[in-house]
Image (tube, rainbow, N blue to C red; front, side, top):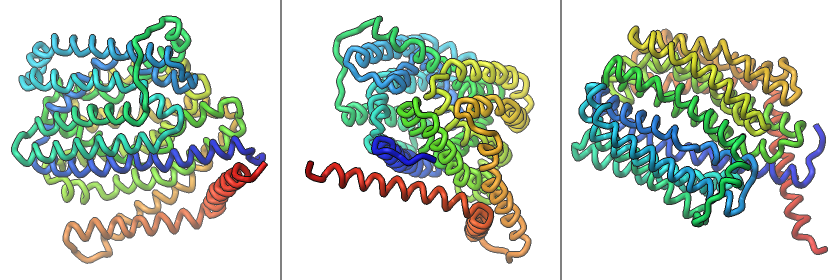
Length: 500
């Protein structure tokens, strides 16, 4: 690997700082939302969660009309002039307003078709998030563009704390589902207000179609990709809600939420930094290749044991923490943990492919997989959540080689080097699961809380020991890279302060 010059070292260290602040950006709101999640899930029924999830998903469907991919286009092109920024802002804001009007007009009809009368009241409230989130697209792009993850973390933490306070106060006073709904709305409002404050940007009353054309190629495909992601991440909830009812949707939404929390904690920080970092280095494939390989290995050593560990201890953790009413979510959670093994890596692959100018290819890949998902949802949802998830996970593994091949081609990277690095974390995680399950037969009966603590302690110790034993050289190399970047950055500061 060639030595880093000052610019490379500076940007690389900025990216690692970005990972730190992105981790805080995820950890703080995740911890707060998990607290709210635990409190509300113990006090409310699966049907309550289901009807709010259905309303929120319908509102998210309306957000498809907002071309949010133009925010990604601003990041990818590094555009910062007022004309481009303001034009994208007004495009998104007006689109959001139109989407909200359509939501209000259709709320009554949707409530009647779904058999959930409360949707007529919930949709107009949660639909406000469409407008609020739309006006926050540009300032968020500005913060991401400059790797200002400390400011993003501050904004998100503030929004999470305010939303948590509102939600817990309302649920303890008996407001039920409105505690969940107002928490979601408050998160968006506080987040966008804080984003404008930290970005120090205000839109001007200017609009240029020429400026939008500069961003159209990337922006439309990025927007299309987000639409297709909705088909995977949200459309299934609409189908489950309409076909199986609010209670089963509550179980399904609960399982997905646990999965998303774990996915965000284990890989979200690196995923958030991937797009702007790789975009800034897209002309130096060697640097991108080394950075990507290190990032994916780092993700795997954290994500693999978390997902496999959760699958191993879910039977004890879920009833103890969230309540026995969620026992029906055990197998959906375990199935989603199998999916998590590749989604944590897929997050980084998506960031890489888009940042290296292949947004069009990624769009068509997502289009194809999204279209395959739709008949799976319709045909298998009536047969039960677990069967539907098994088929979806199998489909994802079947199609996963396509983005892997594209990644290898873009980076001129061998398959053995890329895929081989995941073997040690996977073996260590499987060994951990075996030790956890095996130790249960050897330990004496204990309280549920002590049983879970024993599982976690034994699992963490066994994973760490096995990983160090089989990947000591790779771990040492990764640590050495961090130390090299830190020393190089220190030298840059010393040289900058020296008299000329």
